[in-house]
Length: 377
Image (cartoon, rainbow, N blue to C red; front, side):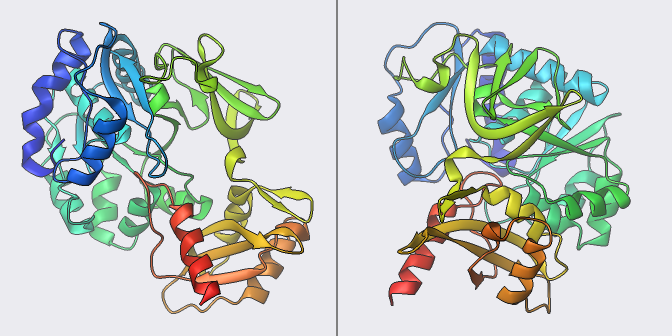
């Protein structure tokens, strides 16, 4: 999958995928031989696959053996049609995400479904707000959309021209990771029509918008775990016929914790990232949601590190606001004012940028390794 102007070369293949008339495709990142080899070795392109599979889209993890969600043309069409229904109609889409991940792929697929040519921002050398502003100015459709990850949205809010450009769009989808509430409030106050999306490769991307399932999507909570079903569901994983996530026909068991209140889904954190400290569980995303409300915190990631006494200790990695110098004592007090003291961080690390894996997801494994290495030196 190319970036920049080369995106047009793959649109015919994506059109075939939507129509169910071509072979199954495995999207891999153009120019990244190592990742292409890793994905190809695990998912074995060229070997037989069911006739109704249109795309095999990898999950965004960077450790272990990659999993490939098998998506049918019917599921992809259901996703695109339900998205346009929710947003108010088909339109032109601006691509500002990597094209081999489901979020970037869906930007292109929705444009193909709508019969519009995508506007493209080349992000191979990084995300520039000036480039986004220019790309938006060139969009000519009656309805115009884009999709961003939270880190991109945060950067745009520091550029008045970019904010004005985004505010001119009919919708800006934001997903890939939880968007801090202060960022959402700031964007909406600036007139940007933000739509929070929740989903994954296994559901053709976002299938719940602003907490409300799209047409054809079903949600249920089982012992605090979110399960998703419906028309957009993948047909399982390539080469893993009995994966427990798809054990119940018609449902996908996520690793997300959540609740449904008055018909609205609220994600409370990741079950597989819970920190066991002193015999109690701490959900990192709950603590992060509190910490980003602190005026000195621009972005943060909470994780657990091994601790002889507690099992794990809570650690926070912070990107400060420009000119700010947050302290551990200050951040602990801020957390204790809202949550149990168990959730308060016992260690603080300051970084200039949060490493990412996939679109918008913090690379907790890389941060954990960095902190462990720093501690042992």
